[in-house]
Length: 364
Image 1 (tube, rainbow, N blue to C red):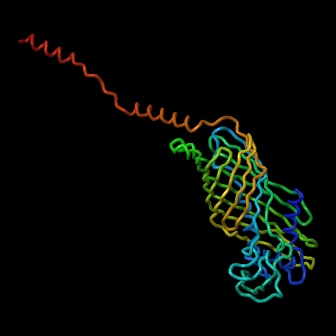
Image 2 (cartoon, rainbow, N blue to C red; image 1 turned 90 degrees about the vertical axis):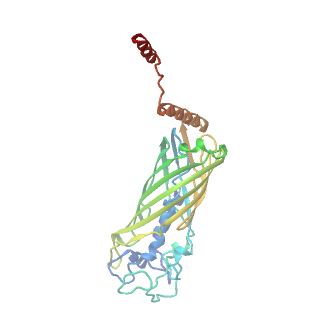
Image 3 (cartoon, rainbow, N blue to C red; image 1 turned 180 degrees about the vertical axis):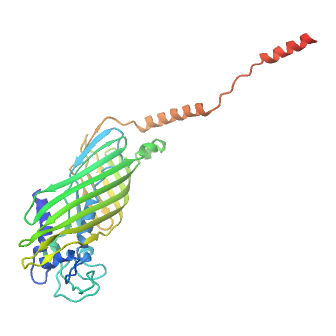
């Protein structure tokens, strides 16, 4: 927990670090102000923050493509590590630094930077502390229940005020449904562990920050969405290989009011979307014993991430039917349906013809 607090605090205290050529606290904060301040309103400058947050929060929703029919419970502390690369340190197709970028010799005019149209802004260096970060992560606690192949996931985290970091909260909800029970029994025996799931995950997070010697607060509200299809296959009983394909989004909305030590007012209102797009996941899930269920893997999309669920546990209450039992049940149901749908032939009563014949003979 202490390491998590240090990481989160450094991300936002970093706004306050200042030395020659590095961005000052003022120039870092006014990037969120759309009121027309010189060098303000810089969505491209802060965009890597929400892109990294989206990468981390849209990970680790699913630990298996199979959701059992029996009631089950799972919980853990999934951790996603997202490397900070040159994509995060510079504006697209230029060497102009973002808030994660390097320092530059001076404020050189560049009309291509995303900022307010007037007055035109200048190139501003990255933040020294953020520039030194190589890995981005986020604390998450997660638990889920499942029944009849449907799974509901809840995740969250709350931290008390830590120095300039005044508040931190996270809430998320996810849904998953697996379809393997509909077709596994009809596959060749070597493919009957194949499973397919559809999943959705939503996160909402809030961060409040007040720099030293400032009054008021910078509020950052974060929301993310992930839609994905997960395909799983177990070559051996204790291991599952998972491939996921999906689409992820992330949005960060700033708010609040800050007053600088020199009584300048900053009004953050900027909203920024992350680099939304398709996401590919490759993961390996293990079943070790009755309940230990670690998962490791990688996510490839807007950013590459490394997913670890080494502290993940699952308990199933009951036993699901085997594919042989399902196949037998389906066969019986099919035979019963054929009996009902097949018209029943009635036997013809030939005695009627015999009575008519006798009647005719008597009349003659």
